[in-house]
Length: 170
View 1: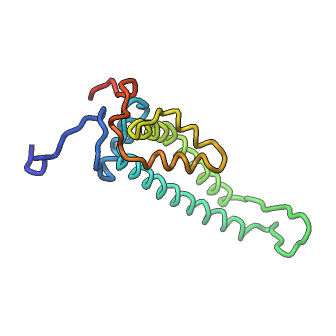
View 2: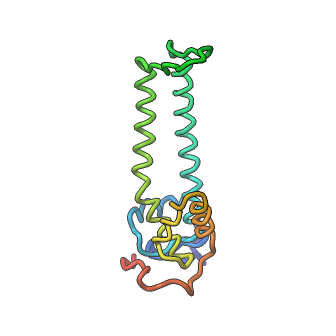
């Protein structure tokens, strides 16, 4: 134990880490990859949400640059044609680059799908709601807003249920 550890409560992965920093939140996000039982603090959730937002913005920017260069160099783009356009043809290296960026984007999204769903599930538990409330987000227009509000609600320990607790106790 070092002097910097004095007074800092040690919490295992089975407990939420209130006041987590970005590095701690991301580390716990991957360590609790597919744990739907337990709780996640607001800081654990929002730091990961911010990191994912930045990651997807960077990937989207790269995709946009590659796509724009592909559109600019496409021989079949006729901007003055008022009729139906044939679109663009992806040829050579540009087509490979566009496909590679698309596959990286897909791989990242698939790799983060389960841990993100598990984190949202645990965050809902910590706010006092059952995990399946996640599916409220699929209601058109109001669902995502409602889910965002539920995820922002502070911890309500009086609403925690034993069935939601993480049995691993690590």
